[in-house]
Length: 405
Figure 1 (tube, rainbow, N blue to C red):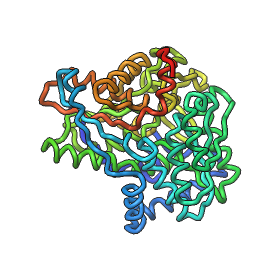
Figure 2: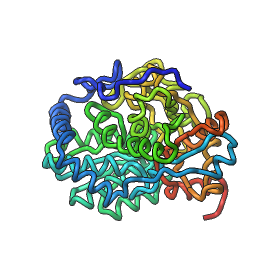
Figure 3: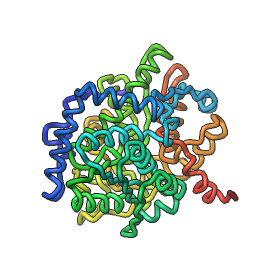
Figure 4: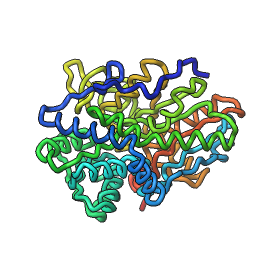
């Protein structure tokens, strides 16, 4: 069992958006007014019963909440150890947890009178969720996506365009998520008066890490209620993949004050922990500032952002959410990484044994969840957050494995 002390969840961030030494606001002056306006609007709706009731309605009727807590019996038998449960965020409309935040921020934008929405996306799931929310509420939608990610996530590009979004490819740099965020921020600076930026993860300048976290807390609330109803006790361990970290903090947050529950975040190990070959910030990063936030970043000694790699487009990012860095320092969340080879093996194993094709991002969590289950006794319980489904990844995996599609 973990010996980490419980964390007072609702004490963070402070009024300046800091999680200890992490977080904060590092943006051009032209965005300060927009961020302050956004914070004021969010703090208002946070305790507004009418807004929260409307959000719950859309999460139920449109997104499909609550999601199931699924006992993975054959994977459990395969491991020969702890019981493995999946929190089935993959069952949500649009295919991932991203719809929780996209719906909530779209509603908030409407309240603020913003009729144009911009977003960034890596694996495409946040872009699809944002496009769906904008279609539902009649909002203009522009999504920025790295050209390389557009190639490996072509299905999601078409889905976004089918729902009326304009998808703008980004050709700069590595042509992945970091560059997409850069372009989205440039757009926001130019069009701030009538545009809201739906940031897709628990990252960026305050109030985004707090706000996105809160919009995903429903994951952990449901999981806690469901495991207590199913097993009559709390789980022993929770496991989730971590890019920026929205699905992970959404699951973990309700358990932070339960020190008997170990929390594991799993980063992208890529080809191994060699410069430019992975996206495991805690395995090779250092403190710095990137895209509005102070946190752990993959950068060289001169502060230049290093190249990253992951088989999963959604984890291929050089920085991690500031709240995760804070909890890691305090020993409350432990971090590991999964390599591309491990992920591809677990992707196939989960499909064969459970009839569930997980997103490549989520499969990173499955890799570590299987390791933990094998190390624990049969009377222990591990919950893995299945943050998204793998329809979007099937063609990419088939190509890697040399299969015809």
